[in-house]
Image 1 (tube, one colour):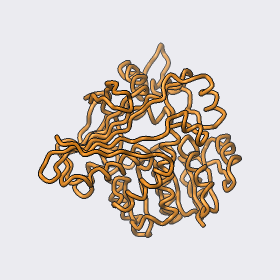
Image 2 (cartoon, helix red, strand yellow):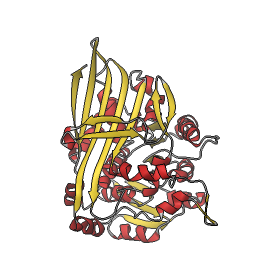
Image 3 (cartoon, helix red, strand yellow):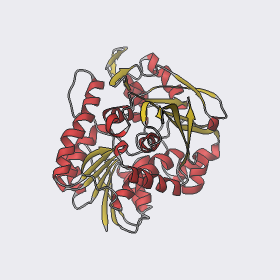
Length: 413
């Protein structure tokens, strides 16, 4: 029987907790967050859970919460990742993170600090987790996470790989003002941050909202949409791991589009996503923090979601696509993968949660279930693009059980 600590009970952490409550080999779920009301609300809905108020910035509190658990699931913002990682090492637990973590390496350029921090995680934390015979797994939501697993699935069809395009379009719009269905802090933080791409075999920085890629997708009724540069982990992970896991791919991109981008782009151009302190009529403000004060949090409880659905939706569409270009049997080909998953309405009908929670939270839980079932022989630290073929197939079988499926087509170029 396993004991699991969930750090952060927002949209994703709460979804994982609900799924863990159904698992027969889970003895206890410790739900920890600084938001005591959110913890208590979640714990009341579960059978195997107990709650703790934990400040992720205080290492001792994280360690206290982690004592005796087999795995720590970190669903907190990036700045708390180091404390969570160190706590897992101290209590000798496995570790799972929806993203990576920040603040590990100091650099003049914040973007460089982020990239070098991920490299540091592989090397420094990889060795330390291997020394205690445990595994730390990072990038375990839908993107990064599922999209990395699908990219591993696609590359099997190639003898060599040149370019990988990962494209996500999110078009779930409610009549209520609700720009984001996950953490607005994370969403806008990514949008204000310099993006990254792996180009010509090197990691490069790119301007947010730049270098659009235009496509027509059947799941969007062949509407022409534009996806732009966006700060995401995938090109960093997969660029670093290109030779060993992606058959030498030299160009790896993550492109993002949809209603959130359309909302945030004007804010970025106006400078109100800046985290630098500004003087406004004699008052010192940080534009980013001021903006966040005016954005509602995402819904996570059934009653909230029902209210939004009752008020009505403008649209409930999306696309999740991977294109991998390379050679097969001496010919130029493109491997085209399209994901199919329940949207907001169907997710609520199935599980009483949003489409974002269904896809990202569920996809996170599939990794957790693999931990519970001892499907990870690896030790050290790996990202979700480093699963072996057997693990990729098993993960995708778990996803299919929840109607998160994919189509794959090989097209001559």
